[in-house]
Image (cartoon, rainbow, N blue to C red; front, side, top):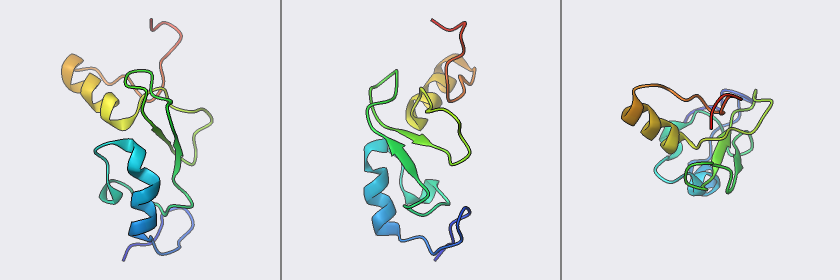
Length: 89
């Protein structure tokens, strides 16, 4: 069992999987945090309308879910980052 990188508690994979369910292809293996430290915002992705994972240190909610960010990177060769900048359409 792994420890959460934020709070140090043991990661309960069942609880974390339920929390991450809206994030499509992601699983508990993609994260190193417990369910209490994983913040998921439903319906926030500007591409697919799915959920986004908000890192603990983030000041804003990301515009792209991890799957759409990876998809944009593979299609365009440019990483859009988690949030759109003011110059983006």
